[in-house]
Image 1 (cartoon, rainbow, N blue to C red):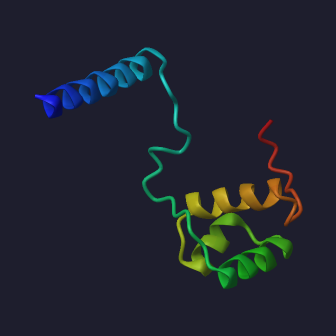
Image 2 (cartoon, one colour):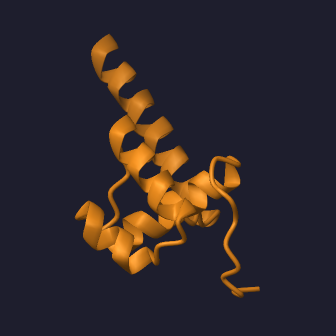
Length: 93
């Protein structure tokens, strides 16, 4: 009987959290980018930084590194935000 009460309490808690999240829509950035790869080796980062600094186009970097354009663009944004590579004039704003 005690186990059943614990289980019911856990179910109510889970349902309460689900309903709370359902009412407050949460948007996850890049959730649907299927071809995005999030993990890079140190060697790949160094190669990326080098190609970025010689101003190679993102499409060419993606071919050279055998990664998707989305992955390379996201890495470029990450590296720029960290100040690891110079910003590019993308004229997107």
